[in-house]
Image (cartoon, rainbow, N blue to C red; front, side, top):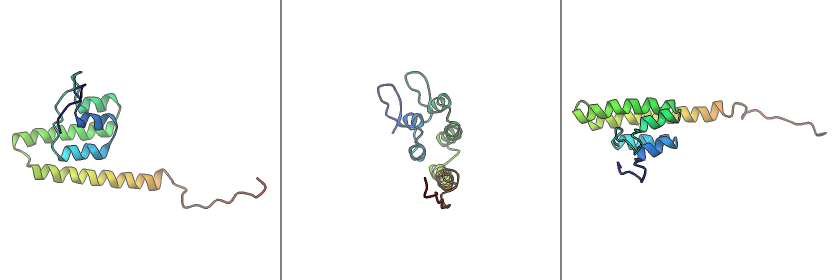
Length: 117
């Protein structure tokens, strides 16, 4: 999980770079270390900031705090998993709503074009 590629990037960093939220949540639930740095000294959160992914920045900041609590024994693995599964469900619900409502607001309308066109 925390293995690195030739550039020192972990799966968490690659998921962040490529904006793959489902993989990000899976890695968080699996306790990927958010504090690891690549060869340039960047964490996954630093990459999210560079890529201007505010949602990822928010999630990674929260996860860094949760991970710290987990390592210090202030948060159990079950609590971590429950918290992030809830985040993931909310994210998927928002995505579903956006794809149905915002992206296609006129999908339920039927338009008739004049035959003279």
